[in-house]
Image (tube, rainbow, N blue to C red):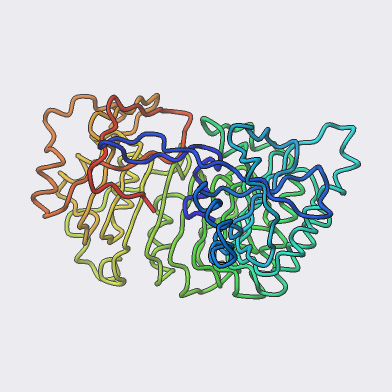
Length: 453
């Protein structure tokens, strides 16, 4: 699974830096793979450069050299999930799948007309048969359109991999969320019994066994049972939760009461997006609790009705027990769509590189110009490209002003220069929201442009 799988549309063309600007890169054709005994309801494909496919036909030696790369990643499409564009299929390069080379599998499940619902077990069983023959997979991603469908034999086969402690990476993704132009409360009432059942099983194994190192959860919601299991998954190195943590179903349950989490010295990356219970102040205790944590993403999280945390007084970083005195700095802190008081609160986290995206630039200007020290240890600050504009429908400042007049503020360049911090204008907006939208007249990318992750 690519590192950014939880916040990128799997079918969106990749953006690459061309002539100093972000532009769509070339589309890589999908190759149809053949396999005996597979239902016509299932398509097997792999995205590979044409040259590699041609090279493997040159000789037996080249075939042996290329095969591990040709079959390493396998896409399994339920036939009605998405029309595969004929222009992107290399019919003449159709090849027979060699399951023993497969290491990563992505499964895309569509929606079935009511008359076909009784036949869905056949489709799931056919996909399960593919998994049975791929004995070496370590990474599995499950994408769904409708989470209500029970996976039956497919879930059983996925669980067998977990029982054998074989899966290192597992992700479950709602494509309705990932492909939506903005978050909506309509998702809160979505019936996702099948997806929750699969997640519950995966978390159950993560509580018993520490082989699962990465877990991505992109879902409409989570029940209390799954949340408690998540708090007990102590073997994870990387955890991503997008939208699944909601305030309404949790009521008074404090998800980020760290006493409920298993002590772990392994979690190094935590990415939270659209998670309502993730109040900014809770992140301070969270960073303290996970001593190995190196990267934290806090994007469009918390709730609009959250209690505002008072701004730390100047000199707070000299107090005993504060984060800069009790743990080493994070390597990366990504903040997206944050109000001013939230940035001041998160500013108590010591960190080497800070990304501030999808927020009015005046916010970070005010924070850095304030006498209150923030982001102790910061070496690099990344903000949106020059020419970016955030159109906001709500106030994001402490004094309820939109703050369009920033003429009296110290510029970011000056503030960064005073602190000997490198300023880069190459941050990206990863998560859409419903109260603002971002545009850029000329999204210039620096020559040393690098992906966020």
